[in-house]
Length: 497
Ligand SMILES: Cc1cc2nc3c(=O)[nH]c(=O)nc-3n(C[C@H](O)[C@H](O)[C@H](O)COP(=O)(O)OP(=O)(O)OC[C@H]3O[C@@H](n4cnc5c(N)ncnc54)[C@H](O)[C@@H]3O)c2cc1C
Image (cartoon, rainbow, N blue to C red):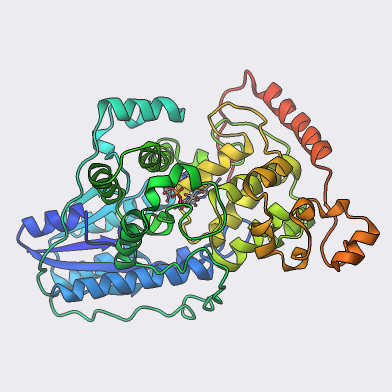
């Protein structure tokens, strides 16, 4: 009797329901990970689906899982290819009697699960799947998934009032050895068609993939530096390792269980302090839950150009505008600094993400999927539901119904980077400018440009749009789409470009 566990976005041993279940059955265990070539293909607009920062993080996470499994007497079988082909093959050769995996909400992942289930059914091998990855377990929701509240606040209130968060399951102490099978080597980044990313000393953190690094970061952020105490006050900053938790990359690959984070927060509240900040980290994790359940409920709708609201907006796909945005050459320092940080490190703060997404959709009027797919390619913490859910919101096609809301860029710059330290970190060409002028370099006179050694239009671009005029123009386009969609029924989905 042997169980095969297919590891996916659950690259950990703590709080792992299926490992616990397999061990309870007292059977042999074969942990498997597949590097699926579809993960390393291209998005609809032709960007690498997984950029080098995330690929390295994934590689480190799989290597760490293998180390942990080996230290407990087992190993990780690693293969490159389609799981729906590889797993039935392993099952036939190794006499596997049951296959388990954590299911994923995205339609693409579900299609793979269906193909795998069919292959295993043909072999007469039973499967067992479970839900992982959210704070509130899907099976503990106080409503059916089809009745999930469309808005965040009713969702949050319902789960907070009528559900509870399960405690994390303990890590196993010992594992059965693998049957005779070649474990297989991890493919190198070059095998995956990528080059190792260059290190950048300006990065907020050196993100190291894997469960061990995740648990160390949890310890460091909450306990050693005591940063949780002030999270709500600092979370919107953009410079430094501890202004926010930086848990997202580990959560995205399942190296860290959200319930483990919750357990640590609860312990901290008992032993040190319980305040608005400690609650707020849980509140943010609820946003993550909300988007995961939204994807499970709405499927492909989240990725469609008209979004959850089915709004037919006449988006532009003007490539030179997009090129300026993604290269950090728009002429707006707050946007450019954030886009350059993303390209150099694979990370961007939440404040940055909100602003660059607002600028792309509300000032440039560009198809939001260009931005979402660029994020998908580059983000080290890319997570389909959080990324596309947040982009739906930013583009005004999410189900929050708040219409055409956009960020006042200059106010944001004042509120969150009054010293100019953030933009100067990422835009060396503006370093000599005083804080009062660094967010609006276009106001410098010719004499000031000479004094500060900056030649605008040469060293740094002039603004590519007028902020107010561009927002007004795009608001008119948005309002038109809203008007014409008022009485229309949701239409069939369009395919991605
Ligand atoms: C346009 C856009 C795209 C985004 N894409 C992603 C993505 O691909 N993956 C991703 O994990 N987050 C995404 N976010 C959400 C958020 O920006 C990141 O989770 C956060 O910046 C990660 O840093 P942190 O771990 O320090 O966050 P913290 O502030 O410490 O928050 C703790 C955790 O709460 C969750 N969280 C916080 N804010 C959000 C949010 N708005 N939506 C969903 N979960 C949230 C994350 O898991 C995060 O790790 C996106 C936001 C925007 C505006």
